[in-house]
Length: 281
Ligand SMILES: C[S@@+](CC[C@H](N)C(=O)[O-])C[C@H]1O[C@@H](n2cnc3c(N)ncnc32)[C@H](O)[C@@H]1O
Figure 1 (tube, rainbow, N blue to C red):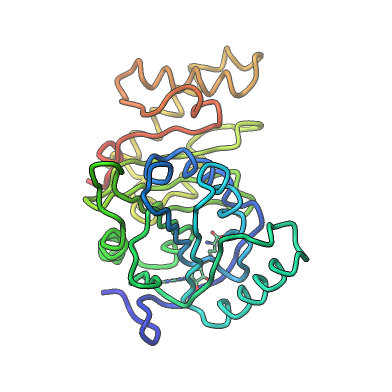
Figure 2: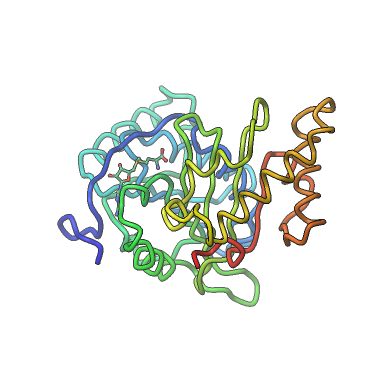
């Protein structure tokens, strides 16, 4: 069972964050039909940490494809809500690089995802939040977050929860995408320059997977196959790490892994697979 802090569900954890840290996941969210085709694009950033910077960055990245996006930053720590609200005043005053009219607001909240008028979200991004919880709590948290997404309609797909982890500089990231019905896909995104082995991502897996990188688990097989594909693609290194990565992903496909998306995503250092391929046994 997940504990509560006041009326918000969850507990206050370390607030470590960093400007530009979430660029990889933001770049992926921008491309999602759940955002692009949303009828009313409310995006929630749950657990933004000791500064609101990643919330402002999310809004400025998403508004390029959805000028009507609204981003709501939720934090369980009331002091962090006060600090982010003061940042918002500076943004409105034009004292920051962010647009004065950024469609951003901040509010206290937890896994119950409170929104104005109870509106459901097109996207809920929860990054580096669950890593400080227990693995056994993940299923309940996922259920709560999914229940706050928009449902599919005739003209728009349902919403997405994007729950994951990255390193301090945002060079190693991975996340699970969940629809209102359940987990859909697993994505990793890596800085390719200087990459020794893709299994470096083992250090930054979502909570549901990070303890599962052991023999007998699907995610372990997947990362071992990816390392083999990366070695197989070594002859492409003289053409640069992007060519080598694309070669490795093609090798994954040739060896039977049903890789999602296409070259334009792979070239960014991304790789997505259906969740069922890595789900805990
Ligand atoms: C490590 S910071 C992550 C900051 C930012 N998302 C990032 O990736 O850089 C985690 C934040 O999540 C907040 N948090 C933890 N549980 C939460 C919950 N149930 N609801 C809202 N915020 C939560 C913590 O208070 C903390 O500020």
